[in-house]
Length: 194
Image 1 (tube, rainbow, N blue to C red):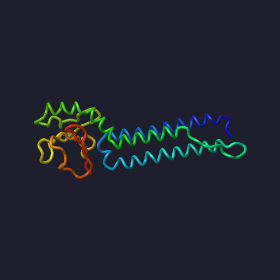
Image 2: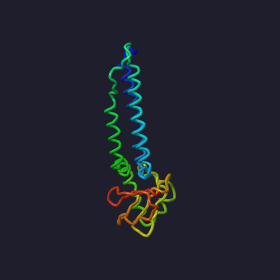
Image 3: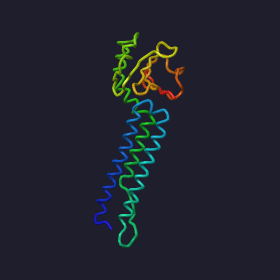
Image 4: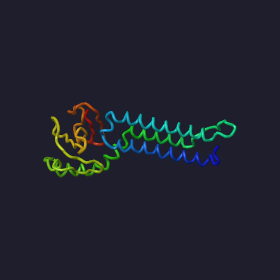
């Protein structure tokens, strides 16, 4: 049926790889922020896996249908990109599981956050007067929260329920509406409220 089946196979491989890379890219972009790690990760992860697996099945079916010869039998179907695509999914899932995107985005923001602490350690009000950019993060407010004076919350501009926290005493007794929290590096932590 097809004059050049290898050309169609290459085209479907390229489309599948591009679509899968886009799904993984969106997932990794969203994983740069703490809000992703409270409930979003599960739905977006399932969405990415499902979308990519459906794309692989569709490409395989298209190749099988278009590859039928005059005899009516289909040649063995294969999508050459399947292994590569599955590898992309597994790697992006592991990166999200170990919070590598969040840690990487924090490393970009850390020098600015530490400078803001050094310059405004006692009076944090200048940080809260405007939106500040720290790496990829846009912070709208910095304040000392709860009952710990050593704990400083850097709240995100677009998500007041998420913050990067500087705390010398840890965050075991963190005052927040239970969502998710974790350690980044040194005295730096992240949290996302429910």
